[in-house]
Image (tube, rainbow, N blue to C red; front, side, top):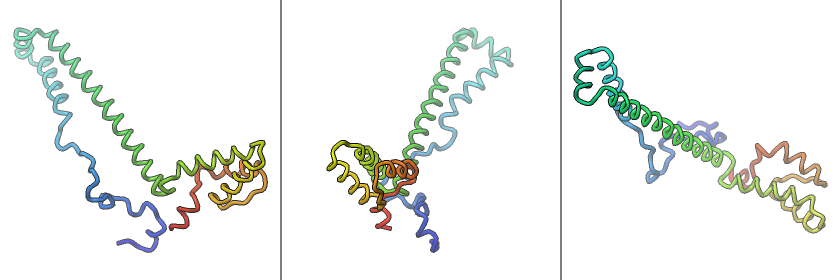
Length: 172
């Protein structure tokens, strides 16, 4: 099923079969699950609003205002649950984005970018040996050869967001 172009595409191997067999699978809610309490609550409020006999029975058994207060509390709990779900979804999406970035740029892409940031700043050092060592490491990490700090800063400002280390490219 893989064609020749999938060798060049780092995202071609993504999918449910790309996970190792022992990797935890995301939990998927089945059925109506968390919507059931909200559906029951809505049905009860509709019955109270439109069926006089049911409203009288609720008022006699529990007190109508207590039921409304309990319904509001349940509705508040449901909204809090929605916010919690949204937060969890956001965290999972951020984790997924991080994994895709690692797949595309290499597993140490953040550390390599931080290293280049530090080395570019080290080019402004007053000590000649620090500048020389920083330039040698920059050339080793990036494959670029510039003679002055300004050229390195300009190049890094332009290429930082798309930087991929030579080690990742050499493995390909």
